Length: 184
Picture 1 (cartoon, rainbow, N blue to C red):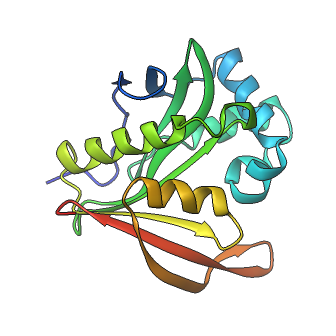
Picture 2: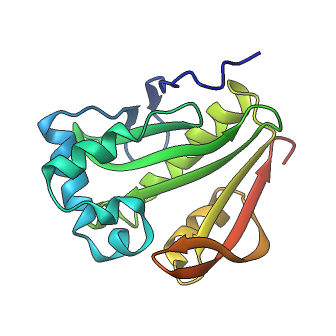
């Protein structure tokens, strides 16, 4: 039985297939990682759709990084050609039902070349093979067409809209739900 209070530490994953080699590694509070988190928080697309958007300074960036490790989360800094350019993570890890949610963001200058697709596919393989997850979900706001395209490219089938499922400030948001089963 898994200790539900134990902090999970993601392993380092190497992705050699695709347009560019990638390394997925745990976040650190290094100056480089803090700088990337702060840069991401200032990008309009990321700020609008990700929790990192609430980060306002280096202290908050370090705090955000600290939240990336918990009993129900595994989160990777996405490195390409020696620098961090995004994140991919599993959250809402449910050891009993073997379900997890997959999330991601990528700095704007690296979008459009298949990098996040590579990373999502690698984390999906890890979740299915090493964590023995049976179902992975991707949820995104209806307007987030980039995340929708990544989910579809990675074989996550659209299942519908979850009405009012996320609270942001005092507003309830609808999210599109995509899922992929280990048997797909």
